[in-house]
Length: 490
Image: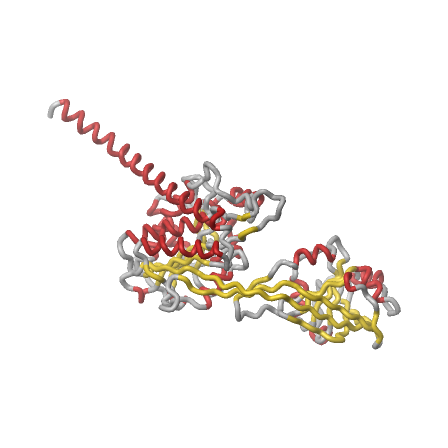
């Protein structure tokens, strides 16, 4: 063999891995370009922030449906009357009227109405002439016999959570009157509670009485009784505190304004060869807040580029690869949900009215806010240790030569994403993303652009990790779609 032939052989051995690396670089660059195109369109002002029930929703649904149809996917609604787009009706309620009337021994006690706020999550709630019982800080919940039919009067102490109020209601109180004895004011409570609360149509929105009163107004109401406000706060500080019936009754009434939003989930399917063996589900929410700022701000739209045009872009590109690849044993359903920002409501609607029995889903993978990490980062798992999926995810990572962040730090966010709604219905659901292995990146996003008009496409937007997510989620879908690798569990 002459020297020329030897040189050519050596050169071919040298250039072959270089050519493969170059090809991989080009493919990765092309994928980042595809993701950027999707995000730029979905997060453009033309889509007006993708608010449910608006023209921005209609444009978003058309964009998703057209892409999936072009890939050769089929509708996954399994409803001939609603192909691709599954209707979801949301009911929003906002506080409207508030009334509180205090009486002592049948005579009305004057308390300024602007010093009391009565709220209900239902359409109307009314409690008439209910005796009042002081429960202190509410750390110890009285027996049902001491609360039944009564209004529990609770010291706020500056705590904004509703755990104590909910516990008192569960123990039999007809309502809770929280005394704002800390830093919170009625104006602060009113501003917080004026936001609309949403639920699925048909779901119970409550109807419990939730009332607030200033400390000075309660002092006025107590005039002429055996207690004054200072005596009550002193009693509450005693370790031997017990509930104190007050020589007062109160009638509380609240109403809410109701609005309805007619919106949609988008459900597509890549058919498998043996759908009776179950299915795989991939999820990303398409919705955001629409116009979320007021003049004189220059930019008024919450475009939601990272949250969650990026997740939706990844879902679209995973769909492309699964559609063009070899047919799997199982069906793969792809779900773009509405109402995530309003309380995971689209995912809840899917779980309550699924296209196939939920027990058929062997795995579900949610995708949310993923355009944060550069390429090559480990993959974090939101829901690590909470499902039966961990061992198989680790096997796919090994197969794909990917690293996993083996901890449960990201689980702090498990209740803030659509996978949680599925977990509540026993669907094994996790979120796997390179962005979620570095919580410093996630928390920086939350502290800066999250849910703000600044969440827009910027020059140099980081998409390396999102491209990695596409490849890994595609591999996960193929693994779990293979009945030999993942036999259907009983």
